[in-house]
Amino acid sequence: MLYNKNKIALVDCNSFYVSCERLFNPSINKKPVVVLSSNDGCVISRSTEAKILGIKMGEPYFKVKKIVKENDVKIFSTNFALYGDISRRVMKTLKLFSPQMEIYSIDEAFLDLSSVKNKNLLEHIHKIRKTVLQWTGIPTSIGIGTTKTLSKAANYIAKKEKSGVIDLVNSNKIDELLSKIKINDVWGVGRQLTKFYIKNGINTACDLKNMHNGWIKKNTSVFGSRTAMELRGITCISLEPHEEKRKNCCVSRSFGKKVTKLEELKESIATHCLNAAEKIRNDNQTVKKITVFIRTSPFHMGKNYYSNSKDIDLPIRTNDSITLVKQALMALESIYKKGYQYQKTGIIFSSLEDIDIYNKNLFSKINNEEKRIKLMKAIDYTNIKYGRNALSVAQAGFKKKWNIKRQYSSRIDTACFDLLPAVKT
DNA sequence: TCTGGGGTCCTAGGACCC
DNA sequence: TCTGGGGTCCTAGGACCC
Image (cartoon, rainbow, N blue to C red; front, side):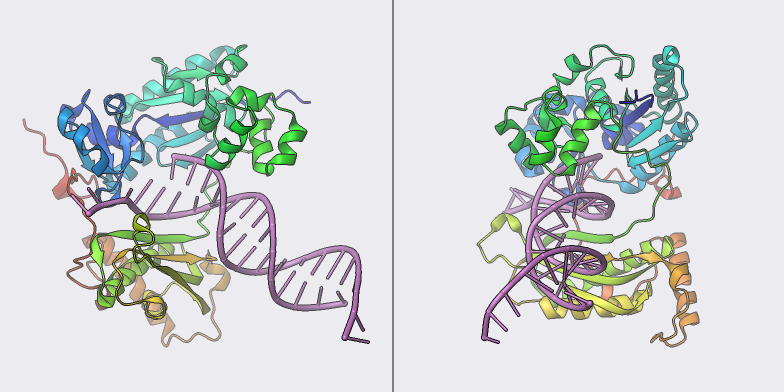
């Protein structure tokens, strides 16, 4: 086996959404803070202080209300405009340390640091951490290993260290450290695999690493053996520095309150459809298949539960909002049933392709196609300038009574002048 | 009363063909 | 009326991620 000389760092922002809110509100530093998901439904980011209080990730807000009240926990609704902007600043800073970088999520990136000498490695990652904090105000943890999975593991431990940094490349205690990671905390091991592994006596990352490869291959999918090999330092998941265009685009929302009327469902589907269409136009893509889905609350199964979806295979690829909304509403009407309390609707665009590939449509059914393309461009431009929904179609509704709850928003938008925080002098 | 949203990849099984 | 084997491609659904 070849000795793997890769050095992959995983930089992960600590309690990212909470850290973003703290940037503009220093009074909540060192206090318990949580950020809620859309519709103020679940806890999706917690400060260390909130974690200590026992608030779990993903827990519904109504279940932790008592803890929140008793401990004066600060609450925020999501503000993705803000988090996205801060994320871009963090990534831009990281890129200076390695052009070979893969943005893995809004708050994580893999960096290829193979060219850094071993003896300088630790110093180097401390410098990355310090720079990101200084330039963006966001605290991070950094783990480094010879594979992505090992860097994830290192990062997991780094999060608990005061230094915020763990180097598994130059470590002779890899097994010891991996023994501290429970099997369900290993990257790539989810609920199902955890159940299976524990049943077979594999309880930690170290157990999995030292398990016979033949056994893993036989009993799990390629996924399982890939993870185990990566823990041994054999690269199976390579770094992908080039951003790929998305292959699917989904826009869905839960309602702020239950909805029964077809008219209101129509408004929501039209709204989601417009947002999705804007997204794919922005990426210069067209769509071939759309799926519309509606459902009542899955948490009250059996009690008049209804969930259905409808696919429509478009005769011609398009990204024209008007055509797409029309199709989506037809799909909705075919699955709508009276008498249900709907909780969520959504739309999925799949088999997306680059627009250039199918630029010319011999059989286009849209009259004046050129004009329509110009119209879409005008809509997108106007909405960027004057805010989303400045220009819309009538089907999307005006009142949107069904719209989400967003009770605790910090209302900071770094791209909107009126919502910028003011500094008193 | 109140339970997020947006992705990717893998696999089994069906449809179809020779 | 009986009956084979092998291949490809597509899709739905599951598992996983943040």
